[in-house]
Structure formats: structure tokens, C-alpha cells
Picture 1 (cartoon, rainbow, N blue to C red):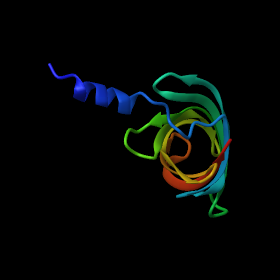
Picture 2 (picture 1 turned 90 degrees about the vertical axis):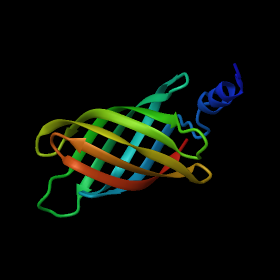
Picture 3 (picture 1 turned 180 degrees about the vertical axis):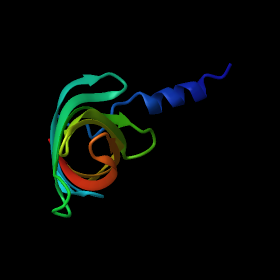
Picture 4 (picture 1 turned 180 degrees about the horizontal axis):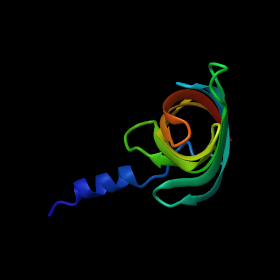
Length: 139
């Protein structure tokens, strides 16, 4: 039995992401508006990534739409082997004229120094389906 492929796969999958952050903050443009997000890590989860808390506030593009406020638990820094990007997933509560729950997932990558980009998709019971892109600073 040749163990070389197994060892290579383990070496690529096990390292933690190089862009792991203790805190982060950024700006986003979404299908429904623009906003800010910020969060912090609570603890590292071996092999998986970082578990943290993230909050967001968004202003609607049109005055007819309500603003969105959200707070959720996030799993970030999920290593994607052989790439310079990592994934994240968030679930929590939101308020857009009424309370609801949401789930969000996406990818993040480096730009320059502590700055990075992110792209994501989201679905919520109060806000519906949406997507966005943004930049963030990681500390």
C-alpha cells in the first residue's frame, strides 16, 4: 500500500489558514444595499478554523427598503487547500422590519497586508436571498 498520496492529502488539508484573524472589520456592497460588518474570534477549532461572533448593519439602496441589522456566530478561516482563499459560514438573527434568522457563506482572500476581499451569498427569513462583495481589515 502506497501511503504517499494519503500523506500528501493530509499535509494539504491539515494546516490552518494563514489569514486567521483575532478581529476583523469591513465594508460591503450587496444586492440590497451597502454596509459594515465587524467581528471577533472566540476560539480556534483545530483543523476547521476559527469560531467567532460577527455583527452587520446595512443601509438599503432605496429608501423604500428597510435597513438590515444582524448578529451571528461564524466559522471562519476554513482552509481551502492549494488556494490562497479560505471559506466562512455564518448563522444568526437579523432584523429587517421584523426579526428573522439567516445563514451566510462565502470565501475570503488576501489583497495587501491585513486587507482582504470577500464574496458571499446569504438567505434569511426576514431579508430573503442576497449576495455581496466587500473588503475587510483583519487584525
